[in-house]
Length: 190
Length: 354
Image (cartoon, rainbow over all chains, first blue to last red; front, side, top):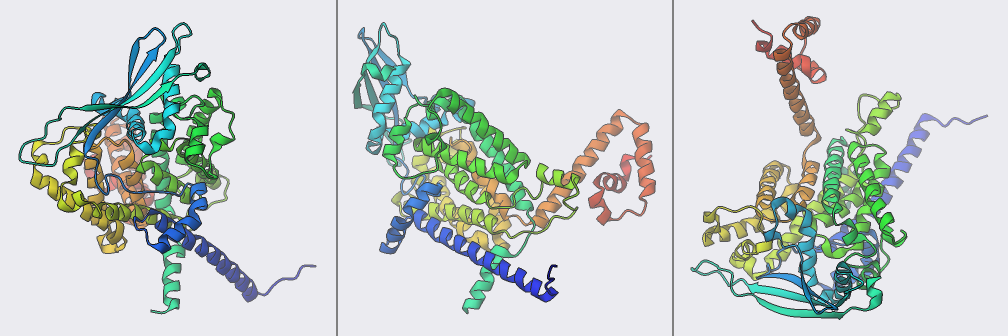
């Protein structure tokens, strides 16, 4: 035998269930609104910093970390790019260039744009942990058992953009600096 | 203002049921930009994500520690597996776009998107970040409720009616919030920089060689116009982040936002960023307006199709449509939304006129 609930009781139960559901979703929403806002805003008040520390593991795990500082607070005032020199056992120097957007076709830029971003990040001292990996990747590109790569140099070229003036801007003399040198080990070429 | 008022406004904003049309349309646009991103990545897939890529998984885990959603960590580290992962990801991006297994597809797409971003954080731009965060909330949205194969199948099986049940828009609201936050934060970051305040920021941006795409007319590089452009950018980012929530200002701001992003697409070399962001604009458009726009397009399309057919076959089709016209001689505008082809023919008598 089944017991039928009166109509108004069924409606009450449905209402309670919906209220509970709304409360749970509201908690989820409120948490995310606060977490995302505190993570993204460019202010470092003690409260915002404390919240960031608290939510950090969740933001990193969930992929909700974010930053909206393109061209900000100040756009870069320098034109820069990275090239590599791979020296092989016979003493020859092979020049390898990261694709440069200004030298590619429009279609090429769409496909190779990630190299622009990568090269832009690679130049930063904060990315120094990546340099050995990049050097090993380059060494493998020139992998010839008879004439293996021995040294990889990463070189940064740059020219500063002068402040605006009445004289139109013309690209000045570029400067160059080797910012990383890597001695290739046999196991790197495996 | 009482707590009750706040609670009421909260419930109204997040839970008042509304048509799932905007979020369904967003699902399609989102899927398309994910597919475009994948196609653009394909040639260098192994260079970026492979075991012998530019950056190894080990280094990435060392540089960016912490527990993260990254399928590469559980995948065998071989070129074959990483290559197969591309096709797996693409397959689910297509399924999401056409709305087949929409919920499952949205979860898989989010996981794959988060994984490739985590695998190599040094090649991502703002558009990728926006896509990833939007994908997170899209998992909770009724994105397959309309314009999807899921719905078509349910209708065929008799498990869905003609009318679509309105749903709580809370997940859609979170993606809208994310878009507004993007603009607000971009404005805040920029307003802290001296070059944005003194109006020289665009001068520097315009001289970054790697960022240039198509040539910009010379007169636009005049210092006064670059200054105006710098301040206009600030004003627009503020408006799109804050004023977008006011209904009366929404459509003019969206129109300006579209122009802004299209001009950036022309001038700057940041592939797909503009499209990643523009895809979410549809979430700010009222479902009724989307419906109207859809019907208008349908009518125009139907009329064009008929004109084309008329030119090709003068006799048989004309007679067929004429018979239909007789049958629906009392056709009113309401019916026209159900039978756009017939309405279009009737209201444009010249097509079949003498």
